[in-house]
Image 1 (cartoon, rainbow, N blue to C red):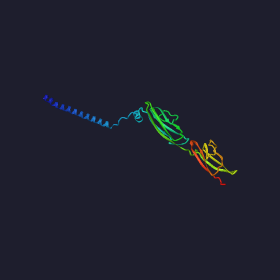
Image 2 (tube, one colour; image 1 turned 45 degrees about the vertical axis):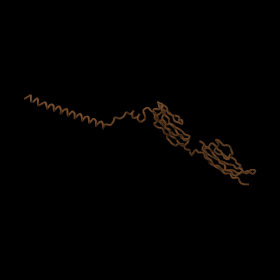
Image 3 (cartoon, rainbow, N blue to C red; image 1 turned 180 degrees about the vertical axis):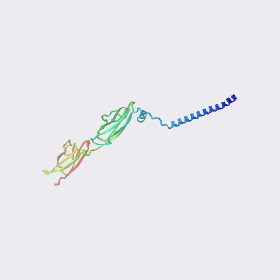
Image 4 (cartoon, rainbow, N blue to C red; image 1 turned 135 degrees about the horizontal axis):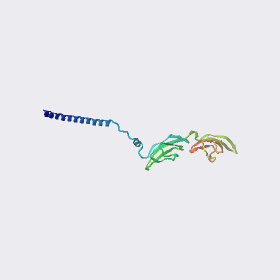
Length: 230
């Protein structure tokens, strides 16, 4: 009888082992599936800070970070600032030459262009390669300093021995040279801002007074001197 009972227990034990193995297999499959799911849902680990920096600015290549002027248009005799920044550079220069330029991530230097100027920044890297950028600054005249003639007129007329003699007077500002056409006197340089001269034309003549200021800017005014007939 006992032998029969022991024989009956064998199938039960086998079934229990099979059931346990099945449960373990199901648990393992679900665990693996959950891991795959969470792996898809979890965000990728952030890139190291230096990797982001290198991706943005380059690892070792020379790079111009910025290059601009504070003012795109300046009035003559006025200054503006040129700002720049370079990375991985062993030398840097600006053309036309600008004082105070050195390798820097962020630097501004003062310039006073005399005319429309195109500035070019060139940075050279440690590997000998270069990077360049350019922009232009325009210079406009200052109305307050432009040369102008304030007056040009006949102030006296006399007749001597049948000749008509006229005294012409003028005044001006912001000029360095004075000339007259037709020529009556040589060009006056660094003269006072006023003066007078004599003319004795044989016939009615138009004289043109011209004053010249800085940068060669000019201002002219005509004056017609009428000579009476007879």
